[in-house]
Structure formats: structure tokens, C-alpha cells
Length: 104
Image (cartoon, rainbow, N blue to C red; front, side, top):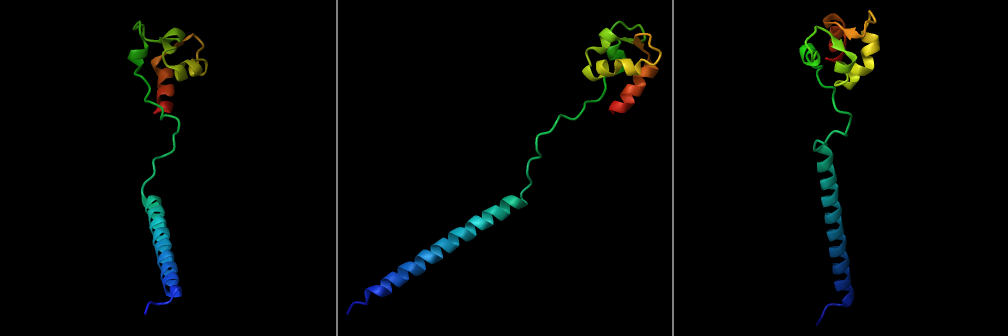
């Protein structure tokens, strides 16, 4: 004698429920694993680089940095007017040191 059809359909339903439960557990485990893994930091502005040595910026070696010489370092060129405390159009090593300390 063969078992009634409802037995097979009940077995099929039980297998389907078990399979879907296993799949959702596997998905949840993958999600928790990825939450524990270190994430790459978001892209941000590049860290400011160290200021160039005074001698490298003083291209003509006259002991001062002119506006033209400062142009190779955009942040320095932008701050030039503020750094040039004696307003002679040149940065002395002392005036440049103020900038360099602020950049480090």
C-alpha cells in the first residue's frame, strides 16, 4: 500500500522551510562577517605634505624666498602676504619658519 499524497506534500513543505531557513542563516552570517571586517577609510583630502626646506625654495640662494620662488608651493604662495611681516616682498628664514611650523 502506498502512503497518502498529503504525506509527500507535508515532507516537501518541511524541506522547503528547512532550506529557506538555512539560506537566511547563511546570509545573516555573511552580513555579520562583513560588519566585523575592517572597512577601507572613506576618501578624504590628501594629508598635507611636509613643507619644503627653505634652501630648496630659495632657488637663487640669496637668503630669501621671493613671490616667484614661493609660487612652486601653492599654500606658501597663498600665505605669502601674511608671512611677509616686514612687507619687503621676500620671506626671510625666520618668516618662513613660522609657515613651516604651522605646516608640520
